[in-house]
Length: 464
Image 1: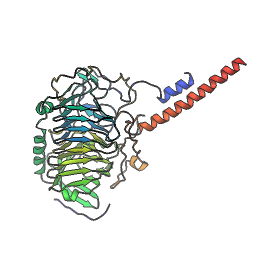
Image 2: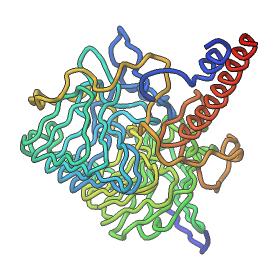
Image 3: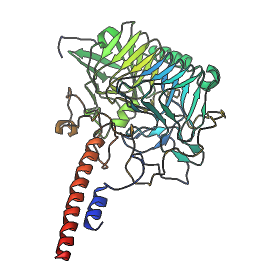
Image 4: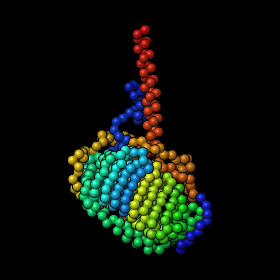
């Protein structure tokens, strides 16, 4: 049954102290993953991790696909996993700075193995002056370093592109540059059409700006199906999933050719708010939900919240300032221009086409530029040192409030934080890590000044 309702609404002690505070050290803010004799680990079918700083699982499938052009401006921070752009890619952050691809500062930890393909562009790749594109930062394994980049046409590098030892090739032609994903737009079109034919297994009700999806049946092969028109979904900001059986994936079929614009504020899943990083079910919810915008011509995710779930939009172009948590497959152009917004690579467990690939994709053997180093371009990092992100200072993001930290069910909660809680002592430098470094610098200055005064007094006493 499909029910739709809508109402209107909306040296010495000083050195020891510094070391204990973690204010002295060398290397980057990224920590290299610890070496493992077992090789890379592949995604489990359940229990995917929440937001963290270190690589967790190897995944060779596409994380983000643009069938047209891909543009980064504003202060967007990073794109986790394999990014495939069929047209041109332009990375031009308004105030300059770093944009991470492949490995990110804080994400799912699901990404290609070191040395594997992380950026494929069918057309031209343009990097504006002042922008640094950092691919596969700090990644090393027996198979290689960093992340590979393949470009069909030219690279216009007014800014900086680093692959950290990964292979870099341009002028390959679109088919070779995108291989093995040169027909991925056909794949997303076919999957969208197939999912769109499924009958709903639950109800969909919109009240004000909140949409509630509630399961009323056993599902279809461990898949819960909901349906809502694009016109009805347009303008929603809170999403609640109720009575979803354990282990079942969810698809929301969005029907019609109406443009959809949303500013995600909160997401509830089986009585837990899952769009805040403190949620124990963040990764689980992100990997179980997919929105199928089968006919929508455009999709806008505004604001600075977290959109939870994968996006399948074969006929749309997309504009993002919110962060996404799931696969993002768009048939047209993608523009991302938020403040520190990120795309986190959570696979969708409801389709073999969109889940983690059991083996990472092989980028082939493109010839790297002569100047490209075969070793990581960054200094070695000692395991246990501070961990990743848009590496270096960015715009600090708000910290979660006490209400957001609470695990209690909240049907229509407040706006989520755009940065994870700093459980391990270091946040991605796209966010709160900046404040920590500033505090560290202040402490260092005070201790240094005190040590200098102490030394001068001792010298004065000895002379007297």
